[in-house]
Length: 70
Image 1 (spheres, rainbow, N blue to C red):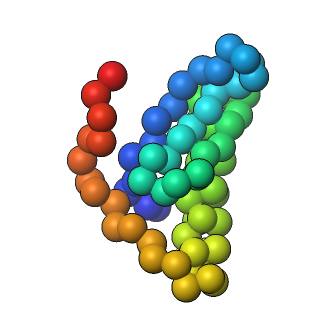
Image 2: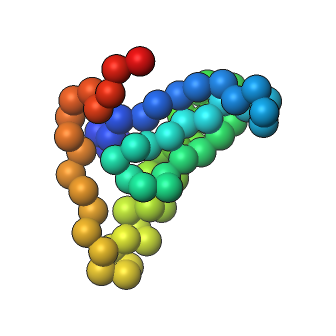
């Protein structure tokens, strides 16, 4: 399991839970429940990393601390 921060919130516009991974630009997922959004986020993280490696792009190390306060 990856150690990237995931921000989970409800989207009124889309009527789904959204999971964003701020350390990986553009990496996000959604689901009807918090659990499914989080599971999809873990899949999205792996796909993001695999794609970056395929194209020779750097993969940032997880910071391991909170990135921002709400």
